[in-house]
Length: 548
Image (cartoon, rainbow, N blue to C red; front, side, top):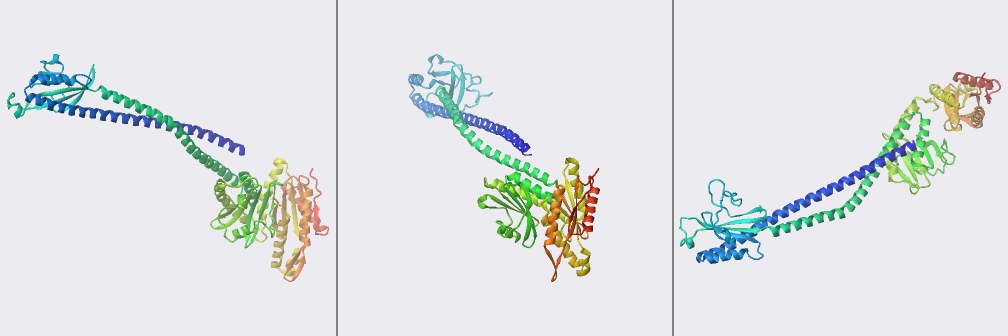
């Protein structure tokens, strides 16, 4: 089971690590895409703003030139007008061409003297069609971006209005006297846009170069944290599934104790495990396992029990949640359901402390164990003799068949003790049935205290009891029977003010020494009991039968 769990954990870890790489790669790609989109958006926005700014500057420049030329027009100095246009386009000026159209679309003045006299069709010229489509309409003052084989330029058209100062040369009926057209090169703006785009691209690459290691490291830590959490939860679910599966295999309280000890021992690598069960009032019992001898024994409850204060607090209802004691080396797990105390587990380990993850698993595990313990307790009530607290005769039939299967499958020996209280009828006749019931309870208690954890004690009927000793040969059965005789014979039984001496006779039979079937085993033990009664009582007799 541990190897399977480790393999499953490795598979999950490998899958999650691959998923982690996918997450980090996807995040980096998304980050690169976001940075690229942002850079493209910034570049596009800057390009648009730079072009718009250049258009505004061109319009402003055209306005200043138009104002200067208007003064020359008013002064009626054509030569100065032509000279001014040539000067405007000369040298390193960004204005590549400047000319004035008259109302007939003919170039009257131009920085390029060869263009003077040429006509421009406003319905065909690209810079005019935006405002002149179809019938002639009044041109708008605007700057239009044009692209030719020689490059890109902004063409700004300024309408020269007719006013009183112009009436000397132009009739008052005309609303305009012409148009001033300025062609301004976009090369400086294009170079600036290219430089900005290059800077943005380099910035994006540098941002990725700086951010990617940081993002990868940050994401790796964050994802590792969640991977650890997922692995822990997955491992917890796997372990809880395994726990529930193991708990569901039995409803027998004695077997359940073994299962719970195995679970706690394996899960927490505990050195000691105590299972405590309340008996009413301040009384409690249970079982104990230690890795020193790797055996499960009934828990002795000394007056100096190191956990007695905790246990009493639990019995009084004061201990309701898991608690770490001994500096974190011991965990105390109260088990309850519906406000009913069902038991308590104490697990101790010496090599390391319990941590928060252990406590989380303790809480989850405790609820499942509580359910199993409640079911086992209810089942125990159903299969227990009400008077003595021992298992009933009906349960004996179930258990002997189950134990006999171990003999048939694995050859595991099984010893059966049948014991009978000597002269019990005299007790009932002399002191009454209540006194007889008291004797039965006391004998049952001493039988139970003498047998080991794992041995099964039954009230067979009347004053007869049966003890099943799994994995025990005939010599071990005789030893246990003699101890029972001694425990009962050496202790007095008080009936009111009278102290009685009670003895028992015990017959012992073993599989396969004396029988090879259930019926023969019970029969041989019964014959041995009869022999013990016949030969003087208060003794142990071993069957002498030898199966053929």
